[in-house]
Length: 480
Image (cartoon, rainbow, N blue to C red; front, side):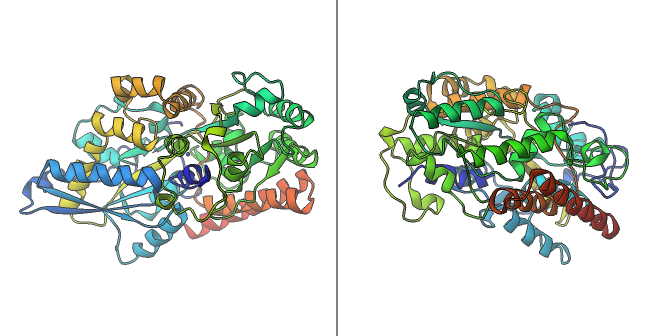
């Protein structure tokens, strides 16, 4: 058993302006032209209404979702929620979602990540949550501002709920001590990460002190935190058309140069961004790396692993070399940024109600989402599934406050929540675009070219920017 059990698949469970955004294609719904939310249809239903829910959450997160659905089903007789896993990645789920659009073979609720926001809107298959919020007179000031801002497009909030998470620096406190570093003081910037890594390497603690799966989400996080756009039109959130890449700039060049230099100097083990890749976790688990950066949603599974309470089979882990959990003294801290710690973008998962089902099903889906957004559910979602509360009041609940001060995973989640609250610029929460998958593919290819094939950082960035601009052009012409 290895710490990878707790981290790798929890990451796949893997995460703005309330004005406007085109993302490459004109949105079709505005705050003044909302479709009707058929709330009354549930009261008129003559029998239990079945609500199918698709997700790609795994490990403790998936288990918690199933338990919440069971609790809801037992609490009333009008609605039955059926939870269906569609794999362990958003790509798997969204491929099935796209395949079901033509014949309207879609679930009542789909939990997808932030990369498909514009595509979901442009598919015209979603009932905007804003419609039901207005019809049900819900006071949205009770919910996370950063979560609402990120998913608001043209004044319309689209998902009925949001899975909130942040990134954390996970580090080996014992190895910090061995290198003469204070385990209670962590690097605040990427420049300081280099300094810490050099001290650890020079002390002979480990050969490559930092292990990172350097992928597009990480690049986006650092650039967004530094206020650098990846696409034009105000990072895809302006009133015009998003049609050009914008990341071929000094900030991105500095970031790529840092990655390239860290690898060449033997301070960084760059893990290939391939499906199921867990080498960064294995490096931490086996004491071969001192630092990595990953999602806060791993927190409860990491703690379960350290306590010997995590079943590897529950997260699909195979045969792994044994490791002594007691020998691991893991800590977590704010993610180091380009300029300052804890600076990142919004994102995470979004819960969409589809408009392809009968009115009573849409109303039933909204009823379940109100249950999911309730205090009890949000407390459970945080403590057991490691997602940060969407409902603000959950952070003041005695159970959450106790968990955030007395448990290892809770203390880590408190750090992540502070990042999410103070480290996301509401006017610059992260990019929005239609061809997000193609953009991320271009970034992945550029990283691979630089670190595995020796391509110069500037050349790798220019190629990725050209590919992104081409993808935006195609998306605009095809309009989804």
